Length: 396
Ligand SMILES: Cc1ncc(COP(=O)(O)O)c(C=O)c1O
Image 1 (tube, rainbow, N blue to C red):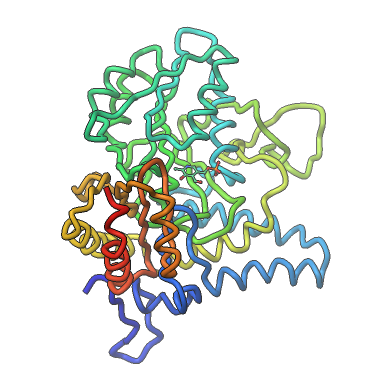
Image 2: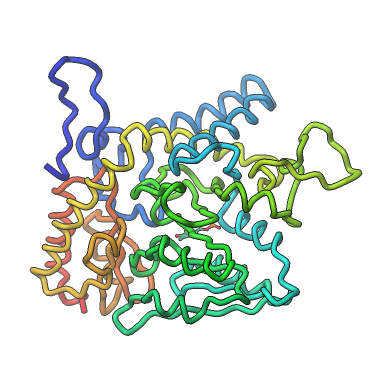
């Protein structure tokens, strides 16, 4: 049954963690709070806290644990690669989506005919801002805007993409409204014109299957703060290997070098692997909790999490319909991810009213954002719907 999860195991073996009650005990916040804000930050798991403390303990006991830090960096690379069904060599470990995307565009020649960057209106600000920053290098930025119903039809992308396009940015799931793009179809359009397709998957990774073998994108990025249960400061960028070998980032650092410990200042010799998109000293304090969070997600399994959250969201949508609320996220399963957005007359007041009942949500634009994850259960949904009913006046 969605939302309930069980850790009983008929053979008496150590039970596998499943979404719902079985995993919830790992997250102390649920002892007093209904947490529904994973689109901003995932809740803190005991093992993630322990991993962060392990970093401090090691520092205290041993001083600089340099070899172990490098090992943790590689563990993060492998954990990201596992989540997207890729090889570690095809994954850069970055400190943020911004760092990875900046390095990516730094590798594009935007001075010739192919100087367009197409951005969907649902990109996270950092992607739009990085695109516009390239205007200083000759780029032309084209925005693809939604229709009145909030959808961005494929034809809008088709209108914007042509042989002048170097890069198309289409986020997998909008942080603003919960809309999900058909990344594969947009990637086909991009490829037909010889353009690169970047899918910022921050609002998807850990809550939805992202499979680089099927998604069609050339570059995928995301980070650990939200559905991967880690802290700020750790992100990744997967690049299709054939593409990567043609790209030379001019935004770089010594951890992107073919031999980090050569310590040479004489040349630029980027690593053959996706490591060429790494930068400086790895984000050590974020590696420990990040790897622990990703391991927890992988242990439960993204397909199981996706199914669990879909069940909870069906219940949530039914509850919202009963209230006559205006849901801004499309209903079809292939048109949204974990995030559900509801129109409010005063979203900040609504977030505050829910917080007063110890329900944590967030806002963007005029929307209340409710984002459920592996640790939520049906009772959480029922509490949220009941609290919204009590504050019906704040729903549009
Ligand atoms: C879709 C999306 N992209 C990117 C980010 C963050 O980017 P960065 O890692 O550069 O801070 C967020 C949230 O913070 C996000 O929701």
